Image (tube, rainbow, N blue to C red; front, side, top):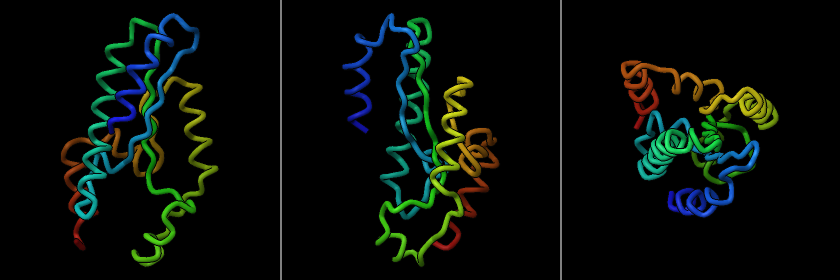
Length: 140
């Protein structure tokens, strides 16, 4: 969580006044609906979401766009050991499909870019988020 804050502070003076200037933060669907077995990860992603919202508001008149990419679970090679421990969890989402959606979001100035479940979390009501939390954490 510290790195995006420090890097944003360092880059903002450089980006101010530049055409097409943008900061891109990558949070997680777990920043909207935390997973009980991953409380610190979920909390840092929620913090990054809040930081992105506030920074977007602060920089709106300086011409610096602040995007937040909110990935759902994506099938990657990342943490194969952890996935094996969880029963080889399969998200059924290939990285190329998610990246294509993210690029489309950048082109259309969608400032909170989700896909699938995470897009639903971005648009959800409090009651829907609470229901998702209960479903996601029912086995824990």
